[in-house]
Amino acid sequence: MSEINVTPFVDVMMVLLIIFMVAAPLQVVGVPVELPRTAAPSLPTEQEEPLTVTLTAEGVTMIQTSEVAQDEIVQRLMAVLTERTSDRVFVRADGAVPYARVVQVMGALNAAGITNIGLVTDTGGPRMTGPDG
Image (tube, rainbow, N blue to C red; front, side, top):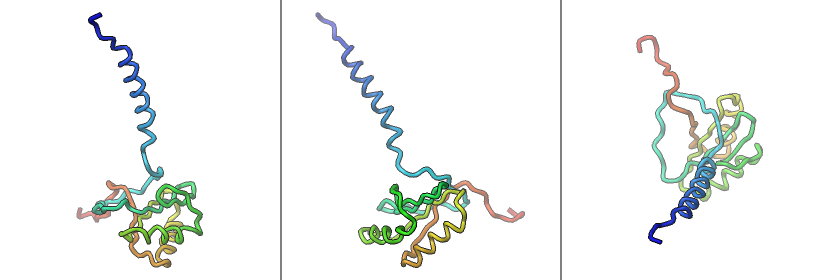
C-alpha cells in the first residue's frame, strides 16, 4: 500500500484542538472588576508582578486572587511584603464600590506603614479640562 493513512493524525489534531479551545479561556488570571475610567496615563511596569488588593462589587476583598477577610488584610499584606523587593501595593476597586470603603482600606494600609499605594483605573476616561480645552 503506497498511500499514507491520515485519519489517525486528523483524530489526534482534533482532540488537541478541542483541548486548547476549552483550556484557553481558563488561563485568564484575575478577578473581574469594572474599573473606573480616568485620563491618567498608566505607570511604568516593574520587574515583579504587582501586589494588588481588589474590592469587588459584591463586597469581597481579595489579595491577588485569594479571598481575604476584611480584618486580615493588613496582616496578610505585611507577610507577603516581607518576601518582596517592591513595597508598592495597588488597590483595584470596582466602580460600584462606595468611596468610603476604598478609603477605609487605604487608611488601614497606611496605618500599617504601607505608604506606597496606587489606585488602578482604566484609561480613556473623561478629561477634566475647562472650556479653554
